Every structure is written in structure tokens, then in C-alpha cells.
Amino acid sequence: MNTTMNSSAQGPYNCEGSTFPESDKERRAFEQFCGCIIPPDTWHSVVEVVLSKLLLIISVLGNLLVIIVLQRMKRSGDHSGAMKLLIQNLCVADMAVCIIYNIYEFVGIDSKASITPVCKLIGGLSWTTLSASSCLICCVTAERYLAVVKPFDFDVNTRRTVLMVVFSWYYSLIFTLPDFYFLTRQEARFCGRGIIPFCSYDYIQGTDITVMLLMTLSATFLVPLIFILAANIAVVRSLLQSQGSRLFRKFRRPNDQGRGGVVFIVLLLTAIFVLCSVPFATYLLLIAVSVTVPKEFAIVAYYLMLVNSTANAFVYSFFSSVFRRNCMELFSPVFMYFRSLLRRARLNL
Image (cartoon, rainbow, N blue to C red; front, top):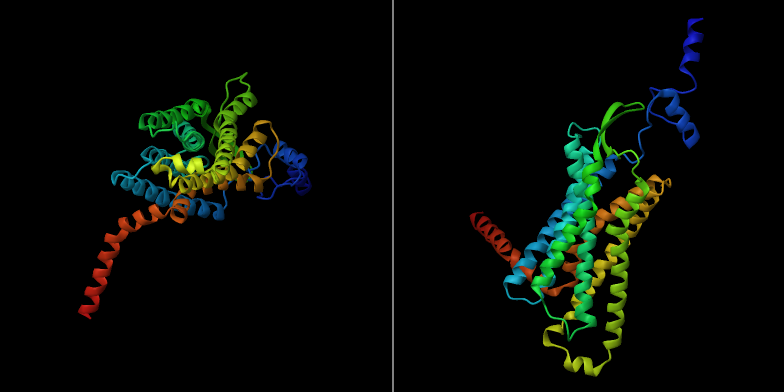
């Protein structure tokens, strides 16, 4: 008699188990019956955690290398100091994207550090760095657009470049302020895992979440993407038109002779950015309009953004002979030191 009553009280679901229904209707019924929330599929697996740490190492080492080498190139009197300043800030933003993402991965859910101040700071900075990366790509594209489309009117202007850098960071900060404000520590009972703290949005009652998310998405991703595509199309058209022009080759300035290689690198960087950003922007857009997104698409979108933050070092290493030469000059003392150590070891043997 008691056994029958216990089995009927348990109902059709095992609330203490770790397996959950597949269909949305059954999952909602499970959550209502058990009084808990099914853990999201976006919680990171071991493979995802290892991949994010690997991308973090590559991004930090690669972007630091680009920053240091470009700084050496500026000191040696190489031209395009303004462009190098933009690229260096882009490296800082890309490196920060990976660093902040990995920190948020640690403190965002089920952590003792999941407290409201940390949620606000790390969550806000994650969006700020993503937005700054897209804005700085816009600035780099704008510099190349002026240099290629209007070569006779264009002049290297460090003051303008500094203003563009400052504008990119402030613009990104302004449009990501809602994340600094609305992100808070919350707690919920997750099925099979108990009470878990996590960082999430706590919107003021009456706030139109969809409109706010769409505004942030448009300002930080969609508008920069449209600008980058339009500017690069104009750059390519100008290069194609001037390719066979004798008049252009005759009157262009001497320091523009090698601009083709720089333009190619910028085009490649922007192409990588566009390819990696479109899935992420699409994912955010679908989330903003409350469309269910498959787990696989969400994972691909997030990790493509991390891959984008590792691109600078590889692009410069493979496609800039000047950069490679400066890298060799930078590391040559280290190679010479280890070579001398090997010689001493051989002599001692």
C-alpha cells in the first residue's frame, strides 16, 4: 500500500535524475512538476573549456607579439605610424575579448565569484571589448579607404588617429552601459544540481528588452559590419580602376608604393572579422527577437568570435615581410643566447 502511494506521488518524472525530456512541451511540464529549471545546453563541456583556454593563449601571445613588433617598427622610423596605432589598439581589444570571455566563463555561473559587482564588471567589459574590436576595424578600414580612394588628399594624421581610437572606446562603452547596469547575481534551483548562483539580466519592470537589445546589437555589430563592407568594396573598386592607370603610377607619392601589401592585410583582417562576426550577430539577433537557437549554432558563433581575436598575429606573420623581418630582429638575441649555451655545452662534453 505504501509502495503504491510513493510511486504515484513521484509522478511521471524523476526529479533527482540528470536526464531530461527532449521536446519543449515535455521539458516545460518537467520543470513545472519538479519546481526547477533544466540546466541550459550552453553550459560548457570539457572540450569547450580546453578550446577557450587554447584560444586565450594564442590570442594573448600573438597579439602581444604584434603590439611589440609594431612599436619597434614605429621607433625605427617606419611609415604609417597612425595605422600601426590603430592595429595596436585592435590587438588590445581582441586580446581583451579572449581574456574577459574566459573570466566570464569562470565567474558567470556556479561560482563563489558570481556576485553582483563582478557580474556587472565582467559582463559589461565583455560587450565593450567586442564592440571596440568592431569599431577599431571600422577605423582601420576608414584609414585605408582615405589612403586608396583619395590618395592625393590623404595625409598621415596622428591626431586624427588618436581621436578615432578614443571615439571607438567611448562609443563602445556608451552603448554597452546597460550591461554594466542590468547584470546582477541571481539564484535558481536547477534540476539535478540544486541552488546555483549565476549572472543574468535583471530588467526594470516595463523595460522593452527586445528594443534595447536590438539597439545595442545595431550600434555594436550591424552598423560597423555595413560600414566595413561598403568601405572595402569602394577600396577594391579603386584599386582595380587604378591598376592599369599610368597617370596614377606616375603621380602617386613614393610612400604609397607599398600600399598594396598593407591594403591586402587590412582587407584580409576585415574579411576574417566579417566571417567571424556574422554568425555571432545573427545569433544575438535571433535571441533578441526570442527565437530558439540550436546549441551547435550558439557554440560555433561564440568560438568564431574568439578565433577572430587570434587572427592578427597570423595575418601579419604570413603576409608582411617587414613584420617577419622585425620579428627575427626581435628574437635574434634570444636565439644567439641559446646557440651560445649549446656551444658551451658541447665544449664541456
